[in-house]
Image 1 (cartoon, helix red, strand yellow):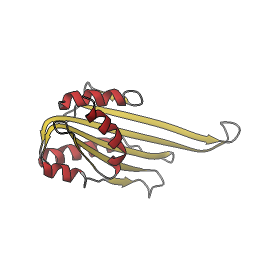
Image 2: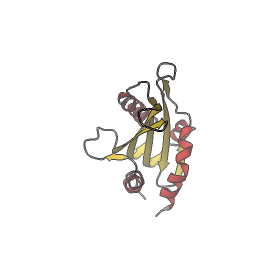
Image 3: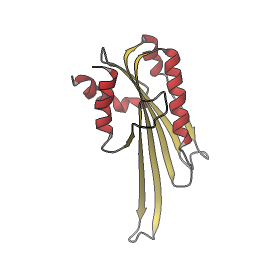
Image 4: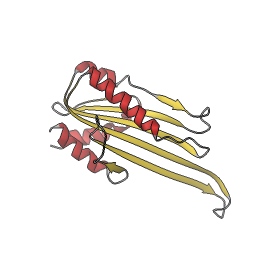
Length: 166
């Protein structure tokens, strides 16, 4: 399986809940996906609102032939910067998470270990107006090798399913 084939399979799993953007995506990314959720709690009638919370996620997909350390750092910085550019903290903002997904035919071994150490975090007004977390996942499509950071671990099952489908 090539990186572009893996990207197609992965985007099919995201299209149900996310707004997937393929056209007009600025390099170095091949696609991006956005998720927005708004929740409210109220008593008896909607005008008696107790609380509300907005949650967002911005996912950036990179499909490359090979990834070295310089390319990983470029993708990492670009994903975090672009994801934070959409954040508008306010009293109902809960979280805006950023996810980087790197799919490549070949990934250097030191890059795979560096992915495990990637982390970014930002809070807004001492978490009163929410926070932003960062997930990172890298899949070497030629071998099926998967690396992820601590928060990216929750995507492990999805990637195992993608890499096992031939």
